[in-house]
Image 1 (spheres, one colour):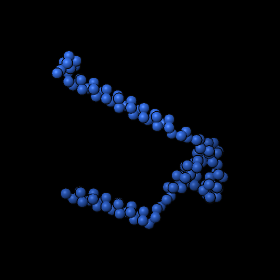
Image 2 (cartoon, one colour):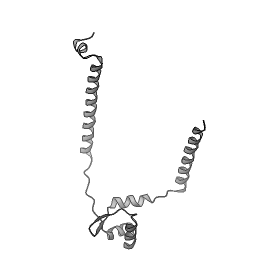
Image 3 (cartoon, helix red, strand yellow):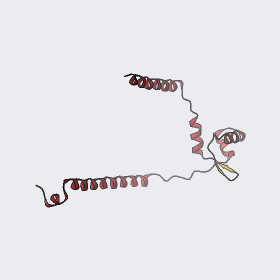
Image 4 (tube, helix red, strand yellow):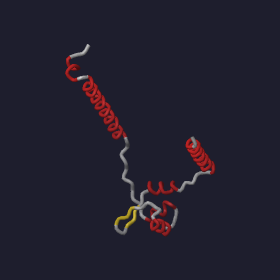
Length: 126
């Protein structure tokens, strides 16, 4: 049976209204879920800044090496006036970037690359 509301609005308008309501419900549920996740996360501690001496000791290199890497722009550094600061996390990320992998990692990476390119070449020959 078609009620009087359906007759007045038309089917398209009715579906549009239902879709808007569903979208609003989905959005509000997602927002509530996300805000509850933020409340359960541990509060981030402010990371202690390190000096050039601290960074050199942490990386087990000389101060001169730190200054050299800073001048080349290869090490992450914060500069404020004449002072240079580092964070432990950024230095750890910097060290991890240099990971070259084992021979097996390199071989697996090469095999995957060659397989992907072979599929591309075979797909373009049609």
